[in-house]
Picture (cartoon, rainbow over the protein chains, first blue to last red):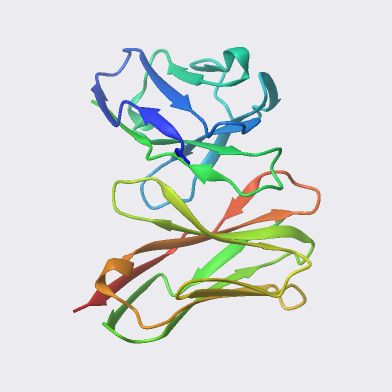
Length: 114
Length: 112
């Protein structure tokens, strides 16, 4: 069974530039999550999708971050414009149906903002 | 407010030792608890998921136990190997909160 796929693995940009991350969840998983993990901290949930609808985006900085999950499968997370404090690893995860199921994570995208 | 604590923050052991990692949570009304492994610069690998009605789960050399009443879970690693070196994180989902609440992890080094 293929796992959660993410790209790119690494990205270096300058502040005020834009960046986009892509995630393909495990086939058949209805729930998709984007997390931000800053070095030395646990992951912070940015947004949760159930199929193509948003369940929770309470911690998403909506002035600069946006995410979509068209057709309820792949998802993209965008940052526009980036700030220095956005430097982190962005993790995508999926679960079969809702938060109560086991979450499976992708390899993450390490973003460095200079 | 649910808080998750992991002790110790770092652990270094010689190869072959059996070891225990600890995870404690403040609100016993959890739905489940999940243990993850994270290698440097990489994503998270799910190791074990324990539902609130369960007392333990086993996978290979790993055994995780859950004691809701005392707010604790332990991850037991038998016959540790250098390849077990990684950061181990636990996370809980509380009964009414749908987000995973994370500990800060235990950084494990198994020395050959």
